[in-house]
Image: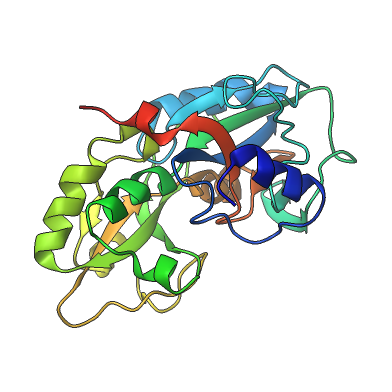
Length: 258
């Protein structure tokens, strides 16, 4: 499916529940974080202070499930394939519909996603192994502290893609043009230097093989709010399940810098 509206319709009908990597080429996908109004301003500030993992694309009014700047018909309660529900910092359930959980004080944040720069990487002839294998990208919780904002503090989460050295340089150059989709990598090479003990056991997603002639390249990841929730422990937080993004009508080209 190439049309974002078609994908959202399939999600609403319960006909699309898998991860969204590779769907709707050319269109921005967003990481989702939904919080009660009492936490909203602090989280907005957290995004401002941590633009690599949390590049803010849109913020809703309290209680409003719409995000018209990302798509005229978007309803955040039913347009994500799978959601995670955290209470007091603990993951309590995964659901496919938020209508029973929706409240008048909930504020939605949509953050840029690496799927936008991945399209540019593939267009430049840099293949992505996890996409070719039909899997989810590898994600790891690091030892790197995010800049705190009020109650929000915690560890940076990164996504990893392996490249040969020359291709890693090209990947840096390409992704640096997408600051609203995490931008350039935050680390290359030794995962132990950022607190990752074993690449074969990601914090989220699927493991991706790193071959002898390749380097692991790490980008800031939009599930960082899920890491932060473990430490901040808001009374309620709803996010997308890893890899299960909001597909928007915004074009990737709109995020690229010349």
